[in-house]
Length: 395
Image (cartoon, rainbow, N blue to C red; front, side, top):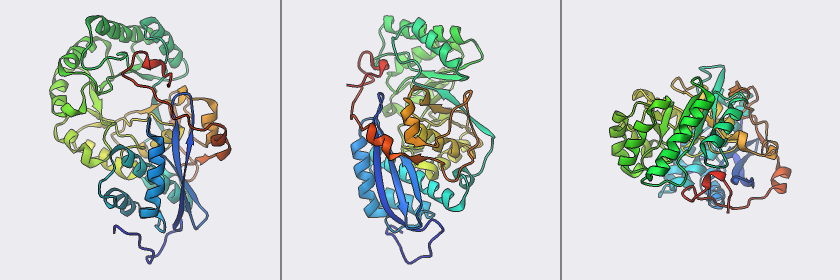
């Protein structure tokens, strides 16, 4: 099972012959992808974006191709997933998790193309006719209540019915009284500006000590939040349940975990109300479906994390269509330059805060090499614990 068996009958997608990687530079971050080729003349694509380790994910994807993919049948998704995860022995953490996820996306793209059906038809079909999304990245700019409120109104005017934002600046561990009040005032201003019918989600970026997190759940209670995301570091996962008991809003999290084994402590401690696996980090379609099923056993909802490109948005839409306990999907698509959509041609558009049912075979996305050539990666970096990070000005 941990070696490619080329003697078994092969499915309609043929056998994998080659894997290549591409990276696109944008003002915010570099987006990385892989393209998997088969001897049946098909190609499948997946996203392997890492915020800061794009070179590493591309290098590992190319190395894994030789070790675990060449000669394989794309329909053997469970075996390929295990071979990439177990066969490399030391697993690979975030970089390895991203590569496994991107390959898995590409396999479903290949299977859908080979069968002439959208990828979601292979992952449980559809429980809904469209997918609701929320906007993130819309608050780039000055960290002032009035500025946040103005940008929130503009984003809602585009049709979004839910917004997520981090009001805490460079806060880490604790917040001074001045910074705490400023953060709460930002949330208050946004709620006042958009009214009671828009869902608001506040992002904690897993950075507060328990006393500060406990204070924040009290201070934020009046604003009727849809959730408070990752208020505590995951090094203190056992305290999440204690914080949940104090909070009036749901607690969400899980974007840092790359498979069901890493999620095990989250489920065992009932750490959150809503899990947030990322389809480009948590094992792709094959693994995220399992995470959603385990979450359902724990009466938890699924709201996938998606801070990547429109390709990951599209793949995530396919993934959640068949999840009964799905609630809403994240998107940064409104933050991106037009050429990003040209580079991932066929990515599903967001219209009035929703994405409609896909119709194209596979994921329906093709990578346009010419656009990648015009926008090479910059390998820039911005530190979200540095003053002014919310302006997303990479250095």
